[in-house]
Image (tube, rainbow, N blue to C red; front, top):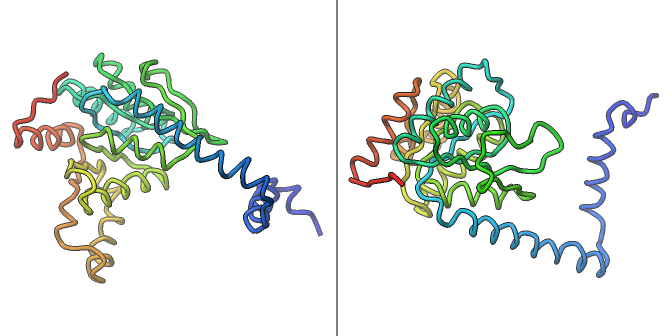
Length: 245
């Protein structure tokens, strides 16, 4: 019988993590690792708050790191970011490749504020070249990074993506639904891509009374860059808010 860990080293890594999570830690390990982690978390929050406190109104663009520049969604994200920047917003992304790169590229092309909140990952994540150096940040913790996304964004554009994108989308939906942040516009781009999930919202979550009917109005689904930008502009026009820097 072959040793699966030799074929797939991730098995060893996962088993080690599992064993460590179940093992009783010594007092010294608790003090030197777990307790000091609190200070690392605090440091990331403080650094984020200091860098982003005066950044001005921004829109976060979420989406897959795996989409290439030839993808229609990559091209659309560039266009959306450019047009949103021309409205007076900065653009916040996760700082990596794919849709994140497209968002930063659009802001860069329009000579606006291009913010990248990167996360240390073992694969597929690296800073893209379109981020303003003064607004380039690196995080160890996903939850700290997500706080920065929602704390400093006045709108969210969600392009097609995987688990990370879904995590960011549901974070924004939850915080708006529970009135923890303002009811900022959320735009889902690509009706074909999102239709299955949105049908599940209606046919399962709503039917089982897990959400309310009005929760389905927390987002808008669009298929073009112009529609995405128009929804955000109409939202702020309604409140007579001047977002230009």
